Image 1 (cartoon, rainbow, N blue to C red):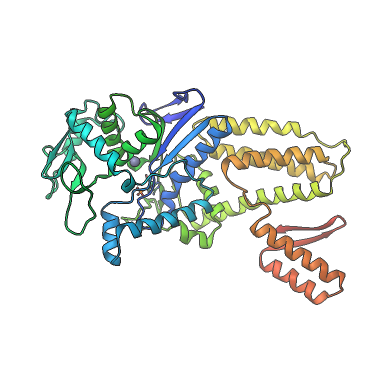
Image 2: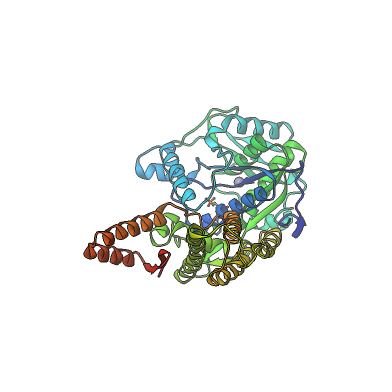
Length: 462
Ligand code: AMP
Ligand code: ZN
C-alpha cells in the first residue's frame, strides 16, 4: 500500500516496523462540545484506514486520545457553573454516541490527558534532564531551538517560524519559539501536583506521552487534520524524539479540511454544524458516505446538495442489497445457466487497488458502484443462481464493510418496513382492506413503495 507521508512529501510504500503489526495514533477531540462535521472527517477517514489495514491482514493497534483539560473546557465549566470533569464526561459520552452512529469503531485505547498525569510529569522530567526543557516560574517550556530538526514536518525553517512567533503577555519563556509543556496553576483552574508546583499539562505533551505509553517509542502511523501539522505535530516530534532519541512516527497522514462556503469549518469561526444536528436531517451513514466519497487529501465542501446526492447514492446501494437478499430467499439450489459471480472479483481488485493508492476511497466507492451496476443487470435477467447471489452478496458486504457503509441489516428501517409489510399481508388475508391500505399509505409516507409480485411483496425506497 502507498501512503502520502507529510514528512517526506511523497507517496511511500507502507511497510510497518514489526511484520504485520501496525501501530496507529490519531489526535482525538477536545471534549468541550459535540464534535462538528469538520472534526468528523479525520475520525471517519482514519477509521477507514484502520478497517482497510485490518482487511489486508494487519494486526492494528489504534489509539485516539481525549483532550479533557484545556482553556476551552475550563471556560465552558465556568460558564455552566460546573466542573471540568463533568463537562469532559458529558462530551466523551456524546462523542461515542455520534461515533457509533457514523460507524467509527472504538479505538483500542482512548486515553485521557487527566488520567495520564504521572506519565506526563515523568516525560517532562526526562526532557529537563536531557537539557531540552526548562522551568520558569512554575511553567515548563521546551526549547525549540535545541531540537535541531525542528520544522522538519511542516517544512518550515526556524527563521521563518521565528518571524511569526511572539511571546504572550503572561508567558515566561526565554525564546519566542519555545512552547509550553506544563502550565503553572492559576486561580479557578484544576491543578495537579508536580515537581514545579501545582499546574496542568500543555496540549502537545499529552499525545507524545500517550503514544509512547500505549504504542512504544516509534509508531507506524500518526494522523490528524492538516491544521495539526504546525505546531501540534511538529511539537510532538520535538518532544518525543528529544526524549527517546528515536524517530517518533514513520508515516504522517493529514486530511484536508472540510469547508463550508469555502472556509474551514471550525468552532472558533462559528460556522459549524455539529454531527448531532446534521444527523437530524441526514442519516449518520449518509454523512460517512459523503465524507468518503472524496479523497481525504482533497478539500470538501459541505452543502445540502452534496448530502442529498450522497443520500441518493447510498439508497442505490441499499436497493441492490435488498434485491439480492430478496432473490436469495426465493432462489433455487440447483445450478443455472445464469451469470457466474467470479467475474465480479475484477471489481474487488479495482477496489483494493484504489484503497492501496493512498486510501483513495473515492475510486474505491466508484468500483463498488460499477459492480452494483453489473449485479443489477445480472439479476434483472431473472436467471441468477443461488450460488451467484450468495457470492455477489458476500462480496458486496465485504467491500461496503471496509468503507463502513450499508451497515443497516435487519435493524432499523428494514425491520420496521418488513414488520409493516407482514402486518399488511395479514390484514389482506383477513380481507381488512381498509387497514391494508392504511399500512400502504404509512409506508408511502416513509418513502417506501410496495410492489406485489408473484414471488411475494417487494419494496423500494422512492
Ligand atoms: P479539535 O477537536 O479541534 O482538536 O479537532 C479534532 C480533529 O479534527 C483534528 O484532527 C483536526 O485537525 C480536525 N479538524 C478540525 N476542523 C476540521 C475541518 N474543518 N476539516 C477537517 N478536519 C478538521
Ligand atoms: Zn495530538
